[in-house]
Image (cartoon, rainbow, N blue to C red):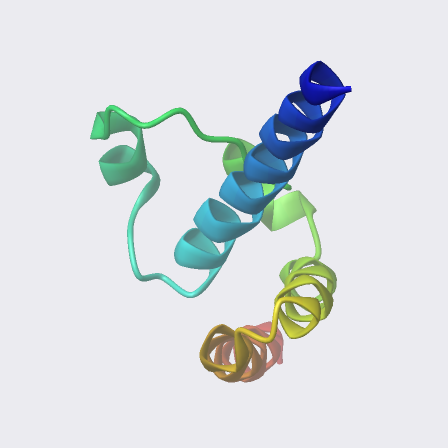
Length: 91
């Protein structure tokens, strides 16, 4: 039972880590190069090499949903602002 709890916590940490670094990159608070230079393991919810093929606005919606669940509303506000900028660029 304890092993299962530990495994669940690791999975939650992995998901949070992926969402956090995706948030940092999509809101342009860091660069992919800087993320690579950290000693921290990380994941992303998108392929940074193909972001132009992805829909950043959809990715941002996923992140907003996730951070609302965690009640991290400051991140949500940053994401809403970023989404507006991506929409503006697209036009």
